[in-house]
Length: 298
Image (tube, rainbow, N blue to C red; front, side, top):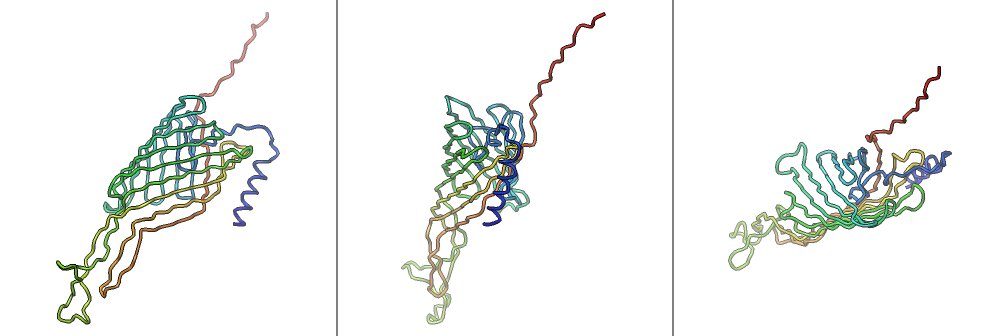
């Protein structure tokens, strides 16, 4: 952790409190995401920005209008996605959101390929620098046996000039298929069937493979400190912690000699979370100053 602390301090000293102390606009926190979840404040109209998360997710966002934005990205090494969003102000400090995330696979065989679509609607309350978002999404994918609902919560809090605390939380409950679980073959009376009934003392039991449908809970959370340079408000770095967990659905795996194992589909993965965002360009037409030409005198 020492290297992370040193990196944060060096960034803050060189950029946040550099010799240029003029007020520089922090342009919508450099775009419309908390970490990956979209907020109700889209990328500015006719501006383009690039985001990288942990070197794996590469995302491009473009503000088409004041209320419509489009994102596209690659999750290395296999996945691509497209994410349009519409957001509109309905009252002071209140915005409604409609969006979609469509993802697919690259270079994978059909049985491993991903096809996924998440349609969501949400509500954001707050101003540009301090706001919170709640959203509900409906996801359909070929990797799960049925569709599922996703709850999304996100927010950002301005701690000081150029420093923000931001985070997001995703939760879903549904079903997950576990393939190839070993089960004993049973007769009509519920007794285990031997491979060699003539040698009951040494014979193993007959096994079969089953696919089980299990209940699951999925949680993704990400908390970051975002730092925006006061010398260059088109660039930011974020540092924090990402957490992914999948759990639920206890089951037994049977062995050939009567043994069994109690298992569950538990998977937990905490990781450091590092993001970089760069505004690539501002494509709004620039005002051309009008020069007054005086009347020549003779």
